[in-house]
Image 1 (cartoon, protein in one colour):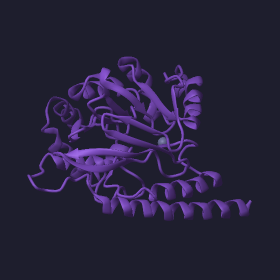
Image 2 (cartoon, helix red, strand yellow; image 1 turned 135 degrees about the horizontal axis):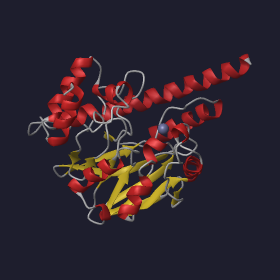
Image 3 (cartoon, protein in one colour; image 1 turned 30 degrees about the horizontal axis):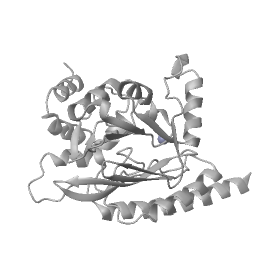
Image 4 (cartoon, protein in one colour; image 1 turned 120 degrees about the vertical axis):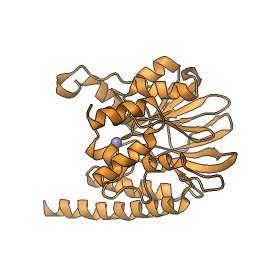
Length: 307
Ligand SMILES: [Zn+2]
């Protein structure tokens, strides 16, 4: 049995996989989150990152390269993103370890890229949840669903336009007061969720899910990113960053992304801080994003002037 297959088989079977994943990271002398997002992005068995209870009311149920977060409340649950095929059944099996699929009331989509919304229609069918996205991202989702998939395959299954949220809309559910923001740049929509409260052995912490930073070219997109990063920076008191991807180019999230941080939870001793509660890194990260967005605008302007 090859090493990859053997590790994956063990990963599927038991929680000892945590140490093995660390061993893989050491083997390849790169951060684990980079292996997931870049180097081994297509390695399906490797991608089956061990699901985890991260806070009293928050679970990581996604593969390694793209996050899927389950927030539970006494009045029903919210799933943030869905991953895509071939992981969707596996994601649903992960959810079932912690909650009933029927308890999912909302599926909030960070933005209109398939790696985030690709499982939404299947999970919606299994749960009856409402699917939530920004208008501009719904348009992207509809487009993806109308065109052939990779290598001429049938169009991927996409959710039908359901709940459309706008800047400042709120959602109250089981003690959570979620505030939605549109933070375009990465796509024309991008849904950021503020106000998520996660509990660490009963102690509340303020979490955020930034629905996608980093523009992908274009002056307008770069300018949108400046505005969006400023909007994010104006949200004060954030302690927990629920990353939608654990790795961000070029050097990753300082101190490790969610892939690394969640694994350290297993060895946490009583009284030690929670590895995901890290406001200092979050604030530095947002500042860096703001600086980068300004540089991107300059770059796009120089490009336009050179034409
Ligand atoms: Zn994206």
